[in-house]
Amino acid sequence: MKTKISILFVVSFLLIGLNVSANNSGNSEKVNPSERKNAYSSYNQSNVTGTTKNQNGQNSTIDLRVTGTSSGLTNYIIYVEYNDGNSWKKLTYSSVIGQKGKFYVTVNSNTYYFDF
Picture 1 (cartoon, rainbow, N blue to C red):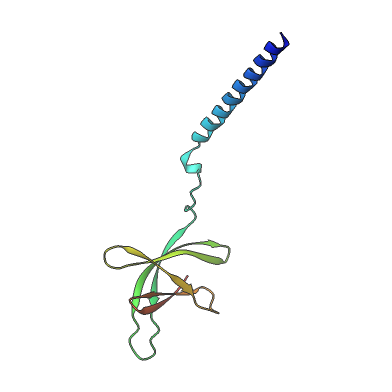
Picture 2: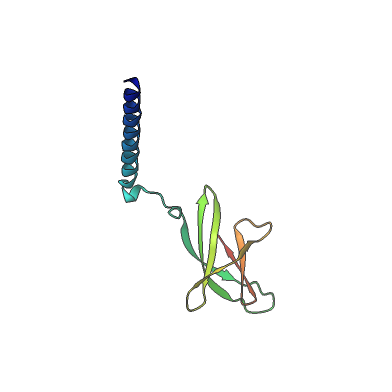
């Protein structure tokens, strides 16, 4: 008799546990979409102009799109893009050593400097 009660207790406990688990997973699906945090929700896109630094001639410019975020007084770049006339292409960027907030990219063998 005790074993039947023990088995009944264990089965009941498991069923209650499954019910609680199902209710918890159901609650997570009922979260208001505006309350969900997207990993990219805090990123900002900024349009900047990259400029060459030619000593002996005409400087040229390029329009860039920088996606990044800021934390306090510091900005962080996630990626940099330029439009080649057909679509936006991601670029490799580098920071200018010793100059905070100054970066550069190379497009078609030209180096363009920009601030972010």
